[in-house]
Image (cartoon, rainbow, N blue to C red; front, side, top):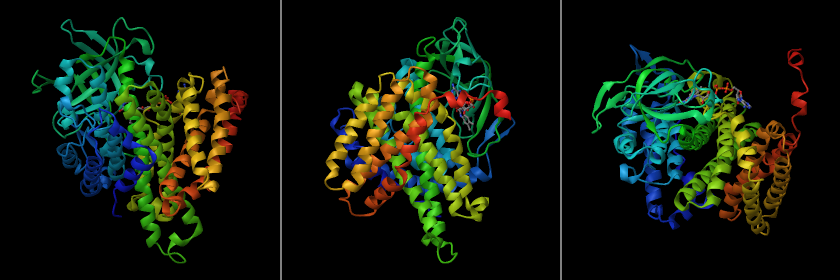
Length: 564
Ligand SMILES: Cc1cc2nc3c(=O)[nH]c(=O)nc-3n(C[C@H](O)[C@H](O)[C@H](O)COP(=O)(O)OP(=O)(O)OC[C@H]3O[C@@H](n4cnc5c(N)ncnc54)[C@H](O)[C@@H]3O)c2cc1C
C-alpha cells in the first residue's frame, strides 16, 4: 500500500466544517494565514508519507526491548524521531517564547492524526511531549519552564506522564507514590508507576517524567496529590545533562498492539523531583495534560481509521473474487461505512480542537464550555470509530486480514488501546453526562440550537438530508432534558455510553450536511453525506432509547445470578 497523507480532507474540514478560519480574526492566531496553514499541513504530510510511514511495520515486527536497564527502540524509530524534531514538528503549538511556533492546537491535532495513520507507536512520543509542554506552560515556575520547554519543544528531550499505579487506574486518587521534601526546595519521589508510555528510549537527550505523588501532608484522594518534574538525568541550570536520577525502568509490557511504543513499569527510589504548580494542586495541572492528551488520542482514532481505510480500499480494488471485490455490495457497505465514519470523527475532533483554540485565544466562557463538552465526545467516538473501522478493514481483507503479513491486523491491534487510555471511554461518557452537564444541559442545548439554525438554512436546498438531521437534534434535546432531570447519578451513568455515541452520531450528521452544502449538493461529499444520514445516523434512535432506560435492569441481577 502507498499511504496518502489525508491533508486535503483535513483542509476541507478546517475550511468548511470546523470554521478554522475564525482563528485568524483573533489576535493570538492572526498570523495563521491560509498559506501558512497549507505549508504546515503539506510539510507534515510529506514527512509522514516519506519518512514515518516506512517505519510503521518495524515497530510491530521488532518491538522495543529492555536491554541492561535501557530501552532499545524499534529499527528506524530513532532516525524518524530525529526527522520529526528537525522539522520542528514535535510541538508546533509550543509557546514562541520558548522556541515553539505558537500555532493553534488544531494543527497539532492534524499532526497527531497524520502521525497515527503512518506510525501510531512512534507518534505517541511527540504526543506525550506536547501534553507535557502544555502542562508546564500553564503551571510550572519560570525556572522550570526556561530549563525544560525549549528542549522539549525542539525534541532534544522527551516527556512522559506518570499517573497510573497498580492500585490506581481510573481511580487516580488512590495512588501511593510519595514525595518527601529534601530541604533544598527539591523532593524525593518514591513509588512505582505502571504503563508509562515511552518511559525510556535510545533517542539521546533526557526523558522528563511528570509524576503525580503525595506530599506528607497531602490528604487522601485527588485533593492531596501534587505534580513533580522528575528527569532521567539531572540537568544543570544551562540544561547540560548531569548525573542519572534514582529511577529505572523495571520492565516493558508485552502488549496487544503498539509494540514499537515502550510501555514501562517505572520505579522511583527517592528520585529528585521539582514541584510543578502549587502543592496539592497536582490534579489541576495534570488535567491540562490529560485534556490535551484526550484530544491527541481522539486524533489517533481518526488517524488509525484513515490508515485502515486506505489499506482496505487498495486491497478491495486488487482482490479478484467473482471480479474485483470492491464491486460487491457488502464490500461497498463496509468501505463506505468506514469512509463516512472517518469523516464524521475527523469533523468532530477538529471542531473540538478549534473550540479549544478559540477558548485559548479569546478566554471566552462559551468557547471553554464548547471545548469541554466536545472533548469526551471526540475522544470516545473517534477512538470507537478507529476500532470499528480497523476491524472492518480486517473483514474487507478476508482471510488475508487475519494474516499478519498484510498489516491490516496491525491497525486493529494498535488502535484498540485508544478506547482505554487517557480515561476509558466509559469514564469519558460519565464525564459528559456528569461534570459536563452540571450546567443543566446548557452547553449541550446551545450547540443543538446552533445546529438546528444551520440545518434550517440548509432545508430549502437539501430537504431530504436536512430533515432527518433536524429530527435527530430534537430527539437529542429530549434526551438531554431527561438526563439533567435525573438526580440519581447512577441513572445517568447507566446510559452514558450510548448517549455519548448518539450525540456523536447527530454531530456527524450535521457535519456531513455541512460538507454537502459546501459542495452545492453535487459530488462525492454529498453522496457520502447521503450515505451517512440515511444509513448510519438512524442508529441514534436506538442509542437514545438505551440511554434513557435507567439503571434498574443493570442492578437487578445479584452477583450469583451474573454467574448462573
Ligand atoms: C498501552 C498503555 C499505555 C498507557 N500509557 C499510560 C501513560 O503513559 N501514563 C499513565 O499514567 N497511564 C498510562 N496507561 C494507563 C491507562 O491510562 C489506564 O490503563 C486507564 O486509565 C484505565 O485504568 P486501569 O487499567 O486501571 O483500568 P480500571 O480503572 O481498573 O478499569 C477497568 C474497567 O472498569 C471501568 N471503571 C473503572 N472505574 C469506573 C467507574 N467509576 N465507573 C464505571 N466504570 C468504571 C473502566 O471503564 C474499565 O472498563 C496506559 C495503559 C496502557 C495499556
